[in-house]
Every structure is written in C-alpha cells, then in structure tokens.
Picture 1 (cartoon, rainbow, N blue to C red):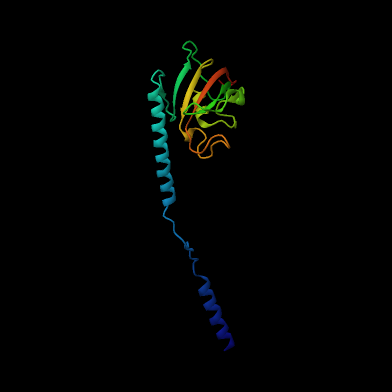
Picture 2 (tube, rainbow, N blue to C red):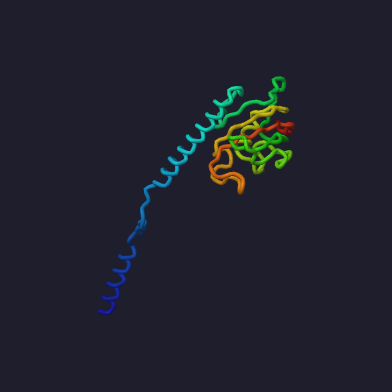
Length: 184
C-alpha cells in the first residue's frame, strides 16, 4: 500500500514537472509616447532655429549662402579656386575657428581655441559635428563662415556658463593646412 501511494506521488510529481515555463508579463505597459513627444519637440525646435537662420541669411544678402547636405549653411569669406584638394578620411588638417551666436556675439574666440590639429574622421577630438563636416568642404587657405542649427553645434548641452541649450551658432573656420595621410 505504501508502495502504491509513493508511486502515485512520484507519478504526480513527474507529471507536474513536465509543464513548460510560462513567460512573465510586464507589470506596466508603455505606449512609446515619450519618444514621439520628444521627436515632435525636436522638430519644433529645429523649425524655429531654421527660421532664425533664414532671417539672418535674408538680412545679409551680400553673402552667397550655400546649403550643405549635412543640414547647415555656409558662405566663403576667402575662396581659393585654384587648389582642388579637399581633406578626406585620415588627412591631418590644421585650422582655427571661433564660435558666435547668430547675433554675432563672440562665445569662444579664435585665440581661446588656438590652432587646432585634427585627423579627419579618425580623431576623438571634441569638435562639434558641424565643424567636422564643414572642414571636409574646404580647401587649404580658405575661410568659411558656417551657420549651424543646435543639433550640429552644442545641442542640448550647450557650453557651461557661455551658451545655453538648443542655441544655433555661427562659426568662422580658417583651414591652414592639409597633410595627406599615407593611405591617400
């Protein structure tokens, strides 16, 4: 009798242990509205910045503004039509630049930045993405003024005690030299 009862319990135990595990369900479900709201907020910020940059361009018709494929605008202060070489991946460039707000107030001067050395698309240097992209559009000896929306400049973070968040900027860059890399 004891044997039958123990066999019955072992059979029940084996049968119960064969059950497949059930997935746990989340306690809360999110709808993804935060991401959608953030995207809408960023689109509105960009539209305001783009309108402000358009106002600046309309107020200065003497400059021949060019829209880049990378989402910013620029014009040449000094243009060299004889040199054809532009920096490419791996080239070492030296340049100077400043940072101003769209009203022309200097935020970081050329003297504060000093002469910059940058290896195109390989350096971890703390350059804003707009300047990294803009340098690739320049030739040695040229000076270009760029108008960057905040997402190509200092964006959400700004510059501590100098530039607030989501502020578009202008920057004048002078490309001093281009040294081709061994691979090019």
